[in-house]
Amino acid sequence: MNNQAVFCRKHLAAAAAISALFACGCASTYQQRSVKGSGFLSDYSQLRERGGDTALLSYRDPQADFHAYTKILIEPVKAYVSGKDSRMAKLPKEDQQKLVNYFDAALREQLKKGFALVGQPGPGVLRLRVAITEATGSSVVLDTVSSVVPIGLALSGVKAVATGKHLSVGEIGAECEGLDSVTGQRLFAAVDARVGRKYTFKFDKFSKWHTAEDAFDFWAEQLLERLVAAKSPAAKK
Image (cartoon, rainbow, N blue to C red; front, side):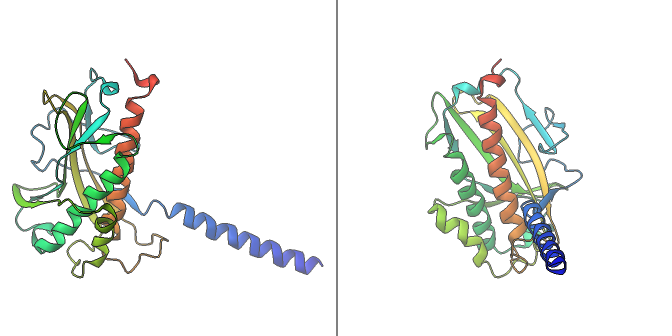
């Protein structure tokens, strides 16, 4: 009986350890140590380095009344590449298209949980500008922007990309800003970059695009969380 009890305890401990690994595996990407603006945003002077789990560089207008915004106009996500010799610049156009479509779909999937998504500017509408970018060197703009496709199709599209070697090192960067759709007033802006972990514990080891997918999902979830928090009673000035 004692031997059986010891056997059971060992197996329970092993099961608990495995569960802990999978729980930690949710964080399959981590933030880079530093990042620089690529040129996608019109102004970087307001951005400051932040700590904690926020973007590496960010800005929020302290006078902005986020309670006034109940709708979001999402501009097509862009591929904005810093340096013509960068890894993303070498990606085939089709692959770039699938990446921006995935990010666009991830944003829409999350933001619709807290806001009405609209196609026109107007009162109470926040205009969101987003780009997939590398954050060093001179700016070279690519004309790849997200297309309007069904969310489910876009979210599965990246997995079908066959040639992912340029991003398979697991590094992805993005920039975004929120503007009042009528006045153009900047409400917030952020620059961030994430790196993939060697082991994600998500059975995606053989997916060349898991870092990009996970980063896009993470950023979309974080954006929704931040915007909802900014509208909470505690955040009201």
